[in-house]
Length: 114
Image 1 (cartoon, rainbow, N blue to C red):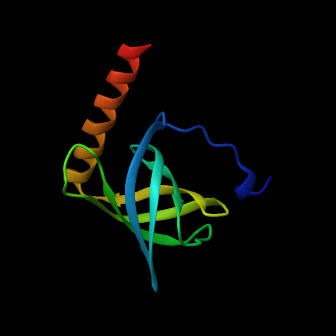
Image 2 (cartoon, one colour):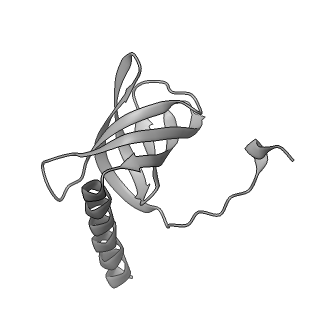
């Protein structure tokens, strides 16, 4: 079995969101909407084509504050047209805390509504 076909269980639940993100890769700047997010990755519908394995810098605007969260290193895991999944590889401790706090609040709100 090749590594590309290996089944991997996610360690976090993805939370549905609608957040603006800018992604920078080498010689382009793309803009997109993050449609789900977890502590170590996201799904985004963008306006610039990427390929699996590409490394990006991402600025994510969460609705809790105006200041974006900068994710220093994201690796593109899969692509379907302009929709792609990114794995967060490097983010500051402050960014990790902010994303974690945001996701916890969203999860609590979701659980309270069901």
